[in-house]
Picture (tube, rainbow, N blue to C red):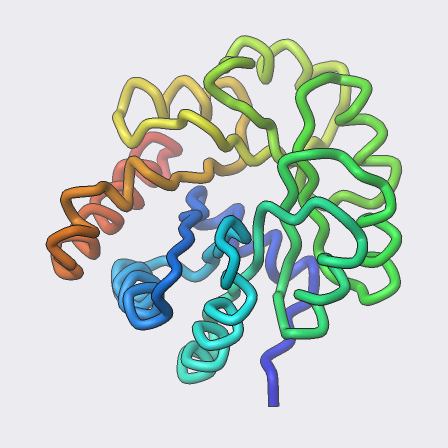
Length: 223
């Protein structure tokens, strides 16, 4: 039987971690190794991204494998429409992430009581997302908007839970800037899953990299 998490549970785990790795791969064996390394590094929320022709098939296999980790929350990212949202929810995705704000997706997620994390780049989009049930809002692309954007909007809209994705770097200076500005968490992809690590299939090295990044985030936040 597929695992089920409430929206509040997922938000709480993301908030505690401060880090959501995002990753995609066309080979389900490598994808499983990556998710497993992340889990052993301390990750409990993972975003697989829908960026390959066979992403659905790989995601289903990874999700099935991860049944052995009852506390691992596995969501799908780069979802762009209601039909794809429905497809991945039916497959068992625990949450839906999009790089855009598309309200037809909000309706599907509401119907299934699944956490919807839309991508926003303006204050109008952020308020619209919040009013339509987004429990967390993804600020994308982070590298273009910058920490100053986050610190400017936080006083305007209270209780925002923001995930920063796109160009976030696993350095003390970059991470500190985002969390100081008011970010709840960051999404990290290619800076964690580097070409060198992936080409060498260096899963212990990946585990170390994720573990040290998690520790750095906790240190920055004073946890």
